[in-house]
Image (tube, rainbow, N blue to C red):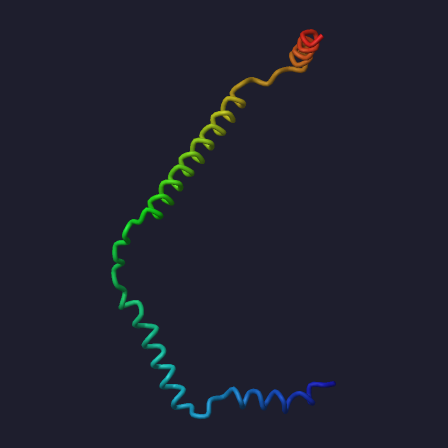
Amino acid sequence: MNQDTFKPFVQELVNAARPANEEATRKSQVAAALVVNSIGSMVTEKREVRKTAFTEAVDFIADKLKAAREAKQAKVQDTKKTETAQPAKSLAELLAESAQDSEENE
């Protein structure tokens, strides 16, 4: 199958997609553009949302989760700082500690 066999079919699709009345199409496009452009100018202020017991409970839980997460992150950062603050042990020191541990376990 070559392209020539599909050309009439494609042309029919293009013709079907074209509007029958181009003047009406232009008017509707202008009207749609006016609506889209006027949406930004019709912004109204939000009304204050009433607090319900459910929203208060959700806010309470969210605040507690946030506080717990922040505390955990602070603790992790503190442990990282203390681990890096200690000087690295030499191989001899590590072997001596290992020998002491094995003597204590026996």
